[in-house]
Image (cartoon, rainbow, N blue to C red; front, side, top):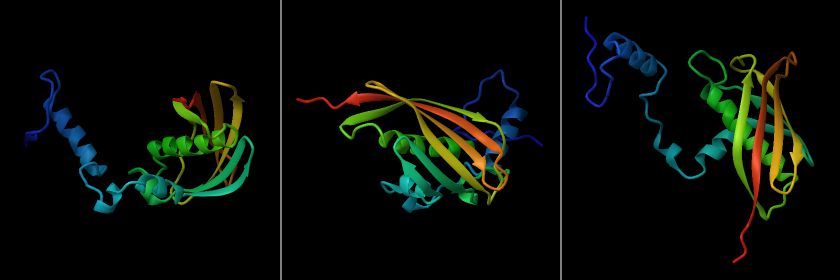
Length: 171
C-alpha cells in the first residue's frame, strides 16, 4: 500500500515518503485538518475563550492568584493540558499582573516568555496559577508564574515573562 501525497504538500526529495505519510496521518488524528466554527473568527473570541477557563481568586499590587480548570477544549489529543494553552495563560496572567504596577500610559511589549514544563496536567483538574512581579523599572518588567495542581500542590510549570515598558509618544 502506497501513501498518496496531497497536491498542496511540498516534500524534500531527501525525506522518506513513508515518514511523510505517517507524519500527515498523525496531524490528521490530532485534528489539524478540522476547521473551527465560523463564530470563532470574530474579534475578541480568543480573549473570551481564555477567560472562560480562569477564575480570579486574589489580586493585589504585583500579585495575582487564579484557578484554571482543564477542560477538553484546551487539552491535547492525550487528554493533557496543551502546551499552547499554557503559553496563552502565561501571556494573559503575566500581562494582568504587570498592569497592577505599570502605569496605564505605558505600553507593554511582551519580549520573552520562558516556560519549564515539569509535569502534565490531566483533564478536569484544577490548577492554581500564582503570578508575582519580580522586577519593575522604567524600561523593564519581569513577572514569574507558578502553576500547581490544586489537589496535591505538585508543581506543574514555572514561567517567566519579560515586558518592555514603552512610553506613549507625545506628538
